[in-house]
Length: 563
Ligand SMILES: OC[C@H]1O[C@H](O[C@H]2O[C@H](CO)[C@@H](O)[C@H](O)[C@H]2O)[C@H](O)[C@@H](O)[C@@H]1O
Image (cartoon, rainbow, N blue to C red; front, side, top):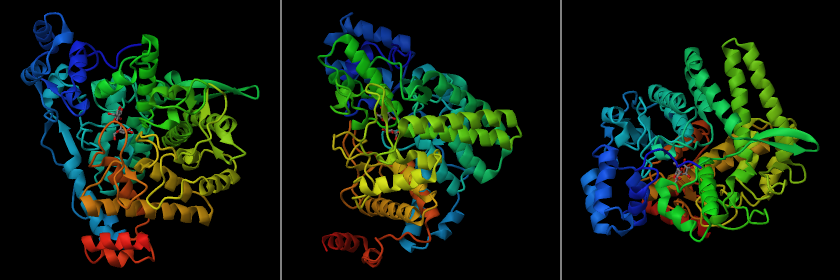
């Protein structure tokens, strides 16, 4: 299997190995985000001379000097930039009834300015000296260690930007993704060379849909369609798998990256995890870790498959490609419907019909393979045992969000499943799973995109009860985000479902602040439910507590919980 990319400094080779295994930095991502001060061949020769052909004997102090001489610290690849389309007081703020939440939403709107980035022209002139992949338009980053454009994060960022009336920035981000498709044939995980052989959940068509819904710009649809078509082809040609159920073959998709070396940005973690494995088993593990990263859920007990094919084990048992995920297939179904709609809007009926048929076939496949009639919900399917994995994940309800199901009763059953799943037992959000594995995409962490997908799904159902549940989850999530903001003056990439305003944890890096998709989801919920959301939990005294002062509010929240 190939390396993550062709750079002998950023993706494979002795420099990467020595620097990362010497653990000179707290986070392996630091080194691979550094810019080269000279051409790569000059640096490789210098390293060879330094080590006299024996790279295993370089003392850390010598490595440090070498880095100082030939590398620049991360973050130097940007030009100062402030989004020119940012302006005070976007319209949606006026729909937020609670004064505390309105003023907080205004602060979130301000955060786009600090998260905006423009890559310097030097990165275009000398791409070989950067791991950052040049994209022509400025963009919004997630924040913290994530100093580059990310794929699926950007869907929620763009939705937030559109509410903030920053259509030019949103459009530029979409054009960047089109640029990446033109170059790679698909969209990499993020705009770094070490991400260039894996993708993330394909949200581009939904980004274009959000943009079109705001602007009605048909010319833009025309511009975007060839790239959307190309991306869809990538997923169907490289990530699909046939499954036979009751003698009928269905085609569905999975995450399946063909890369067989450690992830450069987490190199030492991946090497240590593979210790004691044969070369073949290590390569397989790394391929599956890359596939886990492609899913966006890096990492989770969801991808653990033990030797017997059961959903058990630890990170070393990650086997992402052996599962057919509900969310990926629901998303692709939504892609197919969206593409049909775009073609129809542009008057191309034959192409619209082709995508209608693809969506119908997908829906049939989802119902045949992923729908579990007994539990009344969709479940991930194991290609090892040819059975479902029964564990709870919010994504089990993703087909509702995608509108990809044939019987209204399925929606009702799935709501009942959710109510009895144990996933609603927490006041601060719906956890990613009910398994406390220590990985970040597991209990007790709750992630913004998953809350949003679940809430949107519930709010699309005809039943009043389901829609009220959607609102209740939105209220819980906003309260969690807001309390954390009050405590830390920051937005986090994930939160802990136990504890008011407690940031999430676990996994291989410290919880990050910023934070692109968190801000986007909060703004969307504030816009959607602005007339009803409160900064405290309704009727228990939070609202009045919180309007007094921050410290009193925290006391109040502790007291209310205690009571
Ligand atoms: O460095 C470890 C991993 O970091 C990223 O994943 C996490 O952050 C992303 C940006 O917010 C998010 O898209 C992803 O869902 C998170 O798990 C990166 O995307 C991974 O590829 C990388 O291995």
